[in-house]
Image (cartoon, rainbow, N blue to C red; front, side, top):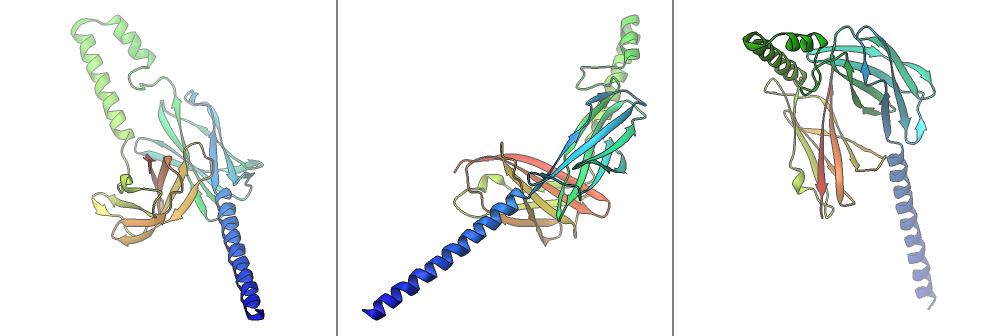
Length: 270
């Protein structure tokens, strides 16, 4: 009987240790999840040429504002890109002042490093009256169409459409080609493989730092996963989806002065 009681006490003690370890692991995972960084770009969406524009990034580490982040704003217009280091302006708030020299549709990216994480939110800023999906035009072009008719007007309109198409084509030029794996295989029943193939000018883009950012719709907590290179230009990591629903995944790629990303949305139904 004493031997039975002793074994029972030992098993109870071991079970408690295992449960404690699991609780610590869950607590650590939860803490890591809460501590994922995020950044929000704050600025006017429509500004004038030569206007001094105040652009801010509010940076969080978990739910706390982060004063120890490094923020660099990249301002892109087609193939042209300008990089400006931001200064800490207020608690968790980093800012620059910038003058846009030409009319156009600009993409502003806040490259943000917090602890060992990197995130790069983006926002579009329209400078002047530019053609956006054919809805707005320069005032001179409007006047030209109003005061010229017939063949000359048609020619001007064709030239404008050509210029607009060229501008849009340049706006979508990317330094890298980032291809993601088949998301239809993702399930909550087992561990999923997140994968990407990255190329530059049709050549494998090797030796890059690649990270997957994953979050479920309407959730603030983002998971950041470092990917390992499994082949020339091929990178992958493992992740377990614990709930069905709509997810967003961003592939972040860094190498030297190249910082690119690709965002996709997918749904897990089982």
